[in-house]
Structure formats: structure tokens, C-alpha cells
Image 1 (tube, one colour):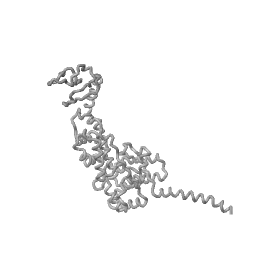
Image 2: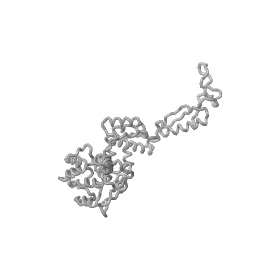
Image 3: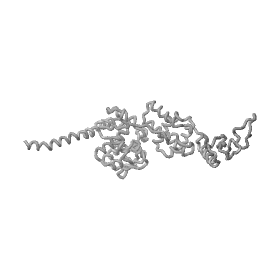
Image 4: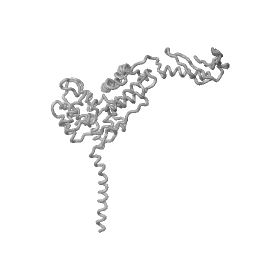
Length: 378
């Protein structure tokens, strides 16, 4: 151990001018002065007081300081420093590509390239701070981004920093205490029967005819867009529809009803394993959003509040309105908790009006029950 007291007996008793040396103590090292540590790590010198005159406590204090320094509390690393940009490449290669779905991987790459790398790419990983992340949140909001968008970017950043801790690149994650933004603008829009009819009419002409079965299947099953687009013909056998490429990773199986069978029968079967493929390129559909927005305009539906996920909201809300039990709807939708399902089930305006009219129904019944009695008394 490299412990010493500044008042140790090997210092001169007097200074050059003959004055008493304030660091000289005749009883050292048994005096009440504090022990000091003095050592080097990776070529850098560290020295400070242990704030105790007890030598055993001073030894323990020094050992703790060495451990803290080696773990990175003082900016020293067992490994060389790495920039966020370099670590992001390592993260994608080692974790994201082997473990994430292609759709999630594509989204992560887009967020990294467009948002996170411009904001943190040149910073040394250990120099990223909670305050810097909070500033990033503020800048994104000021740029007009929605809270939900910023939260997804934060989720990716937090996941990367957590892996950095796990891989011993940093001692602790600066994003641990950073909270997500409150997002009160969750979409609750569902299509009315008239809007659905108009949407189908918009998909009944030209090249949109090939995409119409996708829209129909989304509104029948309440499945996610990626699940339907990933369907293979092998997933539509033995009377069941199997969704393999699901969000939670578990396979979901639905019975093929006559309505679903009619939709599948309307699909032109081409070479290849996938159900929904492009007639021009003979490759499976991966994105139908652009055509969907155009179809909304043709159907007279405002595209500002309607997205493809609205079809899932619509299907699940109608199942709930039809009085189906929650467990059955969860099996169809793939949700594992009631709390998650509640985000997708919304009563229609008509159902809300019917609920508010229950007061009038009760009042009318009460009046009808008392009317004969009043007539008889007369």
C-alpha cells in the first residue's frame, strides 16, 4: 500500500530559514493526522487524504479508491475509449442483427443514421451524460417531433447504453434516470362502416386490386401489417392461419373462416412462398403505406388521423363491441395482458351515444310503470 502521513518523521524538523516545519510531528505515525494515499493507474497519478488517522481504515479506503478508478468512476478504463459511432457499429453487428426482427432492425438503422449518430456519434461513450440526453429530448421536441417518436429514439439509446455497461465499455448507463415523455396523443381513431365501404371501393380498381385482400385480412383478423405481409402459403393450411413473424415472437394460430377463405381465394398465386407478392417484381410486399394514403384520399377519408395500424384498432374494437370475451380477443390479437389490449379497443361514437341514452331509457321505464297506477286512481 502507498500510504503516508505528511507529518512523518523523515521530514526535516526545521525549514531552511530556521522556522519550525508545520509538517513535522515527533509522534508520527501514531499521531492524529490523516493518512494520505499516493499511487498510479495507467500512468496517471492519484493522491488524496483518506480522512482517517487509523491505518487499517486508511488501507480499506485506498483499496476502495483503486477499485472505483479501475471501474471507471474517475474516467480510467481497462479498455481504450470508444466513440458512440464506433460502438453503434459494434452493437448492430453483435446484438441487433442476430437478435432483432428485420423490420425492427430496419427501424433501428434509420433512427441511428438520421437521429442518434448526428447527436452523439462523435462523443466518447463515457462522456455521454444524463444532462446531454435531456438536451437531446428537448431539441427533438423543439424540432416538432411527437413524444412517441422521441420515446422510441430514447428506447434505442437506452438499450445501447445498457449493452455498453454489460460489455464493460462504461461503468454505468447515463440514461438510467432519464424518463420517457408522456404521450397523451395515442391514436383512438377507428373506421366507421361507411368509411370502410368507401375504402374498399377505392381498392377495387387498377393495381390496387392486388392489395385489397391485404386490407380485408387486416380488418378481419386485427393482425399487424407486418404479420400479414409475412404470410406464406405454408401458413395457410389445415384449416388454420398461422402468424409466425409476430411482435412478441410467439406463433399465433387462427381458424380459417369462410370469409378468410374467400379472401385467400381471391389472391393470385404466383411463384414463391409468400401469399402477397407484387405482380411486376414478383417479390413480396414489404410496404403498402404510400398506396394506402392515396386510397384514403380517394375514399374521402382524412389521412391525417388514419394509419395502417388504424385497421387493427378498428377490428379489435368491433370485436369488443360485439360482446366477445376478452380472453378470445387476446388470443386473436396476440396481446399478453389486458392493459395492452385496452390501448386498441375503443368504443365507437354510436356506442357512446347509446351509453349516454341509458338515462332516458330508465326514466321512460319508470314513467311507464307508474302510468297505470295513476289512471286507476282516477
